[in-house]
Image (cartoon, rainbow, N blue to C red; front, side, top):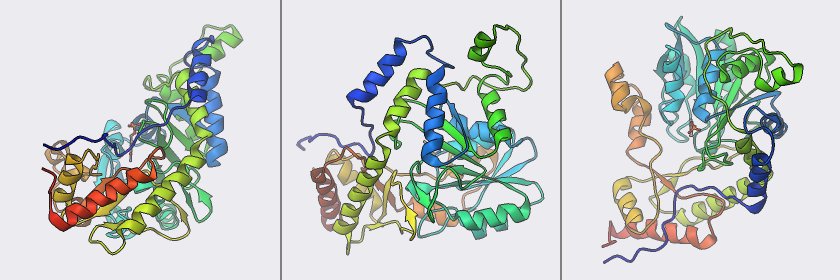
Length: 381
Ligand SMILES: *Cc1c(COP(=O)(O)O)cnc(C)c1O
């Protein structure tokens, strides 16, 4: 029988006493939702990313949906998106009745390939959604040039990249709208939660209204002014986030830089340990601050290595099944073969555990297991 050592997940939150106290303080206050902690978190996130406006919402997916709404994506509009991502990056286009158009990725980084984007543009194209896959910023200069030339909106799904930077510019300021997620496996957490940031006040106002049914004022504004009157001017949703979640977010944000430094340290330890092996990390671009949401390697023996790691209690994972290959997208008519680089990469990619609470011996346990599997196949049982 295999012994079962402590299960090591691929990602996990860190919650300390200050986080818990911040949440408890809000629970004892007057406002559990639409209160001051929401604005406070938005201000904190703007200060951190350098963006002008933040709209905190119920999830990263809601932030992407709000972005599509604010950019007026609708029926007949095409939005170019990477397939090497979580389904939410493309689902947000469908929510608005738009059409996702998948463009392929670079073979070495698995980031959206600007040349593929250019080739996918048609007269119906309205926007590009690029994902800072694994925490590494995309080719933002090239994407910006293409977007400006073709009058397209540029959206960053930076759910992997809070805290990353590109040529000295912070993620959050590189696209017209940037979406972040605060799910527990991401860099900071609010349980569920997300935020859209932008430098455009009009886009921010539309996303803010969208978060609350398209209603023009919030409960707190009405309480302050003593007026009951409000108007619903657009069809929005209830995508609000609570004040206690936002208090947690603000408290977590204070620790983000230390956590990203730790993620980079652990990634370097993996890099060094795997050097010369057939298990190769993804290429890292120069002049970037990598946020290392994921540590992704490629190996022709992916399934064997995966099985071996799982049998050893190591939560290896695969990010991602290309979006257009999911049954739902297949039924919409997306064919296998439209993004051959992403599809081939999918067969060989493996995510190794990486989160800032991991110890040096955890990393050692992972790479020792990887090298074992590489030498002997799955020898676990
Ligand atoms: C996590 C994630 C999302 C969705 O965020 P939720 O907060 O889970 O809704 C979207 N895109 C990418 C790339 C993600 O990793």
